[in-house]
Amino acid sequence: MSGLNKGLAKVEVAVKWDPSPLGTPPHDLDLVAATYAADDLHGEPVYLVYFDSRSPDGTITLDRDSRTGQGFGFDEVMVLELERLADSYARVLVGVAVQQGEQRKTFGDVDGTGLRVREGVTELAVDDLAAVSGATAAIVAEFTRDESGAWHFHEGVRGFDTDPTSFAHMMGSAVI
Image 1 (cartoon, rainbow, N blue to C red):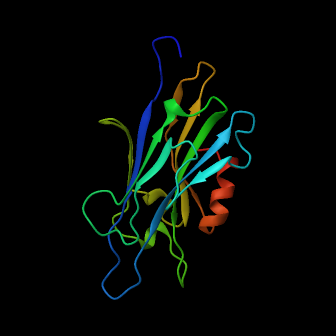
Image 2 (cartoon, rainbow, N blue to C red; image 1 turned 90 degrees about the vertical axis):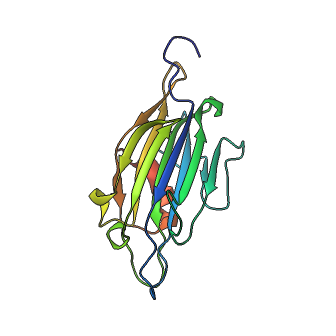
């Protein structure tokens, strides 16, 4: 990569939420990343990264996975080493899905939701997901590679009303 603007290198996407009330089933939010080929930016993802998985080349990892929201700070943390992604990839979307149990749950059913996107100590975005309170899943970050090879962050949150599996395959057609 040449020039002064090298773009983003290594970013972190983190989500948090409060545990469910005593005596009720636990809330579980899951981060998912979808990586798209440069020649098919809005099609099916080449691969997905979610709980218990990582990218084939190790550039996208889910470092912390909570199933209850218990603990301090952010409950799930995903690290994306964009500068290490092969040139064949030019778009990465990160989403959050509310795991569905016996009854439909939305972000509005989960207290204390929060999102943070940062590179090092620089916060790129902070959100409480209130704008998508009626949704069951949301795209929370979009990263794209430009012609020079530099990665850029596109801020925005877009909600979906679907199950986590369908959401992962719908992400590519979305624009935030």
